[in-house]
Figure 1 (spheres, rainbow, N blue to C red):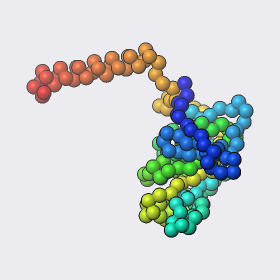
Figure 2: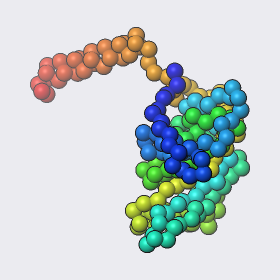
Figure 3: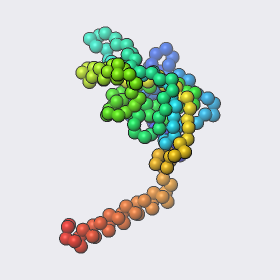
Figure 4: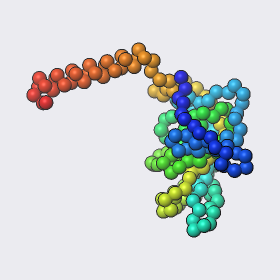
Length: 198
């Protein structure tokens, strides 16, 4: 069963565009829905995207700030759900269809929150520009990372060992897991008591 997240839509994006917002704070505009009948990526699959990445600083002293591009790629491959992608980008592509296009507007908490998250600009100039823009976001205590992304392809990873899953446990598996955890806890408490640890 696919993961479902609550999404609200509003028409306040201007120009007749609908702005969607998820519970996490991710906002997106659906530019093109993708191919009819196309699948959405599942965690653990390889996903090919094309993107342009920007930082949008908040208005400063009444001056409107423009999108500042720091990176782009026409073919970027990621392992969906592996924790090495910017969280808002990973969430934003999860419900896209192949051929779909979206503008993802990430709050700071869904952006570059830790080292090692991609995509990162290839050139030192691009990485320096990104670092400077992120420093400015911290300085003004606001702003968004924005991705214009196209989902190009989804590829099943033949080497995947099933560590990623969109499904939830069925009731029997959940009960078995619960029983195992409770039994292990009881055994550990009994062992601790017999050894005089507790």
